[in-house]
Length: 96
Image (cartoon, rainbow, N blue to C red; front, side, top):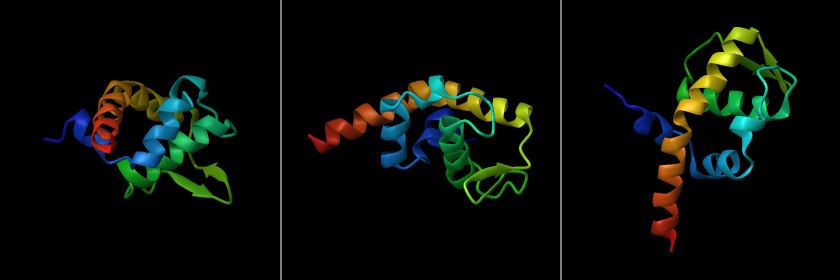
């Protein structure tokens, strides 16, 4: 079974750093027009659930994602945040 740490590791370092340093998780609003939510949505769609056809993104816009779906994605990022922080700290130690 895959754990939260493993899921968080699916997110590339550059996105992880941007999400954490930009505080995207707590600035985001579960709305398809919110710029922070768009970034989280793109990361989720491309790296966490790339095969989920329910989530669509085209021409800079989220398509076919209801408010509940966006809320669920945002909630998942809130769960992943401590793991993202841990991975980022480990990455920084390796880079030092």
